[in-house]
Length: 221
Image 1: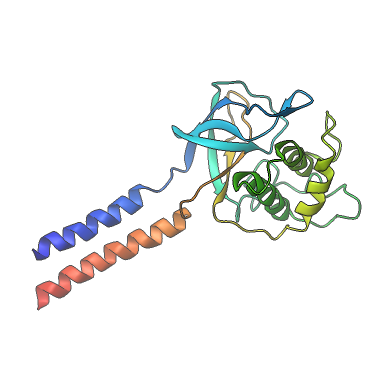
Image 2: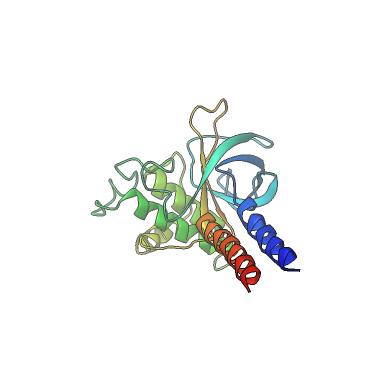
């Protein structure tokens, strides 16, 4: 009985650890949403992350992709996507904010925080303005001059997003294309309800130690 209890704790701990997301992920783009503005499709896009159906928002207007295209990516939480080169738009200076009216001084991480806040408005259902929010995100990452004219609400969304440059949300993640791809990929924002990997690690290690401790304690009685 004592042995079975300890084994159960170990199995549960391993389940937590094995459930950690892989560092290298595969993104497959299934298709755009039915919403578009001026012929440009806006989120939420459909696709798969390591085979799991996921909704994405594109923050990268530079590369065009097609249905069924897949590429490798690395995922980063919102809290780190703009740090140490994580993310397509994490190199200085911040693309939009470095040229905006008086808004110089924002770091790449703060840009991503604003993008994360905008994306969550769609993921959470707080707003259905996919056109305005998508173009606002592209404006933040790619500059105020885009190769198309966005909807009137885009500028307003950008202005509001800049007031959320300290926004944090552990459920907002970024899928960043890996360097050296044979095909162009896009950087995507997506939402998850699962804890961050560090949380899984702590839970798994804690459960494992608890199981070992409980086994030793019972054997010594």
